[in-house]
Length: 153
Image (cartoon, rainbow, N blue to C red):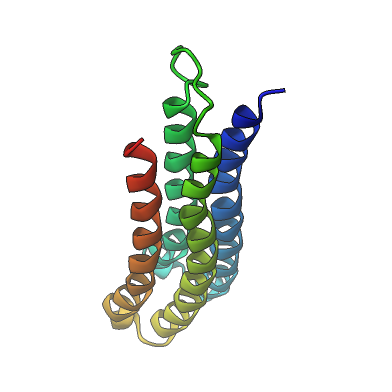
């Protein structure tokens, strides 16, 4: 049994799985809030869709890290597999996984409040968008740490 393979694959699974779970929870919460508003005011659908989608970016960041890990260690791309850095890739996946999970849920909470803002004041979309995007900053920080770790080896 090749432990490096198991650890590298676990890193890829964690990056995409945990960040994806956070994004699914986040997009679901924001979608529920948006659906209630759209039922009464269908013209606000476009604005609310953007707010709903924002917590989904963390899952994309996790997916990118997973693909990079799988490519770097040779599982994807046809290169000779090199699993000597399996533990390293597992550790490198954690910022994107954990940071993505937590920030997606925090971003969803902000998006839900921003959706309520848009429901009350349609011109408040810009403010709600900016508030929701502020949480994205921390998802990006986590993604960048994982990205730098993965591409540096």
